[in-house]
Image (cartoon, rainbow, N blue to C red; front, side, top):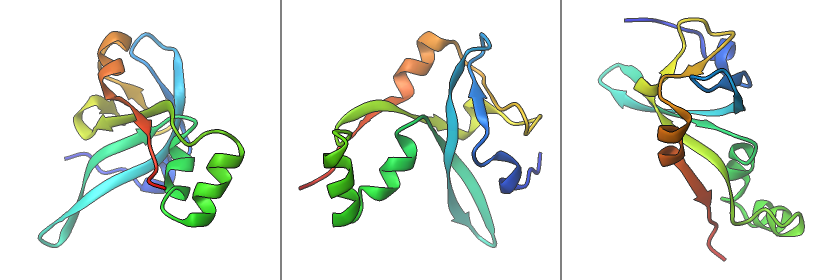
Length: 110
């Protein structure tokens, strides 16, 4: 098992397998398994940071103000599709075409 400190990953630029920049790692999702937290997915992209804001009415108002409430540009990358062996250069392990399947539209309830 590979161990990486989260502070080494958060905010890092994420590259595609082809070496293209796809966004910053904005959020790391983990679940409890016994006494451990296990990473399940990574949220990458310019709008991933705004996704966290969408849970509050203030966040929703901000997203509406800048017209970012229903935008693409967030990737939900499964834990096993991101190579973090070098925490300074996290790289997606699939092609850019496959990466498109992990993109989703952030949608907020009114």
